[in-house]
Length: 332
Image (cartoon, rainbow, N blue to C red; front, side, top):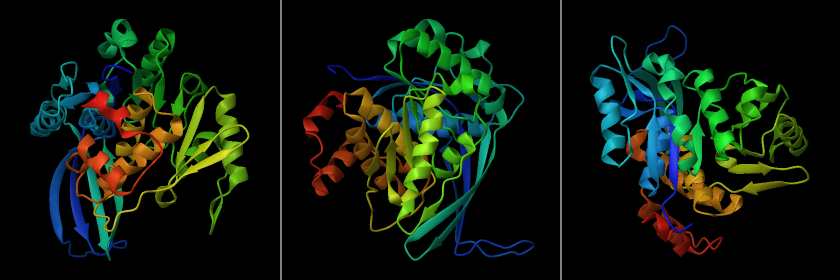
């Protein structure tokens, strides 16, 4: 590719309110926390910002409330160059909020998140209809499940009609209709989401997820029309599951895990940029793994997302040889 990729993200804006503690309270129990802060996020906005920080030309479509959170949620992507001119500001309703409890112990962290969708769930097909005429100018479309399913379905239809690949991150986990899956080029579920989308079990042992279960899940998704299934496996990395083989992409580890909140969004954003600049799927997944590794080493959702220079520096530091780094120069 000789020019920066154009990426369209249709998704959510969510303000995260984050409490850190050394242990999660049990039912009817109160514990002391260590710190509290707020950070802009939302699966769609995180992915859009990550694409932009990696150098892509990004347009974000979504909905915020006419409140202080809405202003703050638009500010960070806008400062990174994301086009938010089409974002709907909904009168009389609050912006999306994420309640994050972060359990931090011994250089690691685990999160528990409750999302209150707010304005995100009010986005309509009519409000995104401008996309139909513009969508052919984009290189890839990113979707998630924090906006109404009919919006995702309409955008995916328009993308397929225009020959534009669609990457769907099926989170939060829910039942998906076959029509939407038939329009998806890249599906990026985690283990729980992959099992839920197909109704098939995914067992694990000390060596990781069962290979036979992974292949059955991917086969079921292929029957529904999904071209590429990439299952993220947390600390075990990710797996590209195809008809006859499974290719594992290792996790890139960091000495300290501060907050895993936006790791999946960072991964998906970087994967989209990677395939858009012409990397093979495996190369793009390695690029995404290095990007997400930096994200988990920092606090907050949007504040943790790295720049292209930071990712290139980590690729060099870890002596990654999967592709020549100058291929990323188009993003600079």
